[in-house]
Length: 273
Image (cartoon, rainbow, N blue to C red):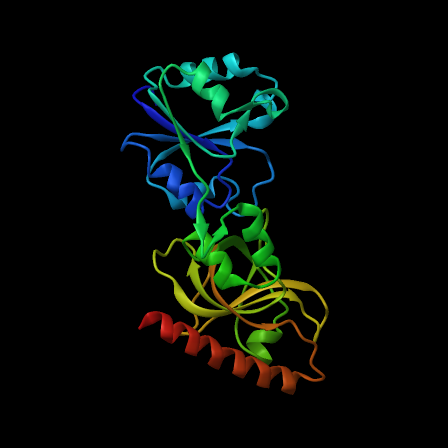
């Protein structure tokens, strides 16, 4: 990163449209500097790279939070010897106890400081905490509008109950760590299997299996034919279909799943048009 002349600094969990406004100010060789808090759950564990063409440098907050303003700038100079431009958001703070703002940054840094104003969607300011709230209430469309892409989680394949393939529909069962899971329920989704580049149309369930053994599950049923999943899958959420429910029998659960599949097909068909 010795050739980097411009950087954008922030937490950037979600890489949403507000963050993208900062990245648009970078030159082609610019670098995104992520201050990693350990609480990222929209784009954890390096998943931010899926949403940018720029290089990313991670700085652990616990390792830099004690720095005063001058020491912070010195650290950036050490990482980026040719640094000429720093891009931050209007609410950016840094240094010990977050005591420094972009105004201090302008005084301490001898290059250009660009401050990106608040980004709004439909007159509502875009923030990661609002996206988390939308996911928690099942407002997938609203979350995706703020993100600028379909919210996506990834997990390793695990064995399910076995009931699905025998009596209901075959599903890919996942163990998902670190990602924030949307509200319990059924969703129209797109699912990518293992290292395939394309996504399959799917209907997915998140929640406790109220109608069977009560265990928690993240599972996806592929709509365009059964697909073998060896190691992992990613689920991209398109729309919320219904809440998690308890059914009195396997037969009533089957009927509900048929309706879920039909609804998911309608949603995803409109998406494909």
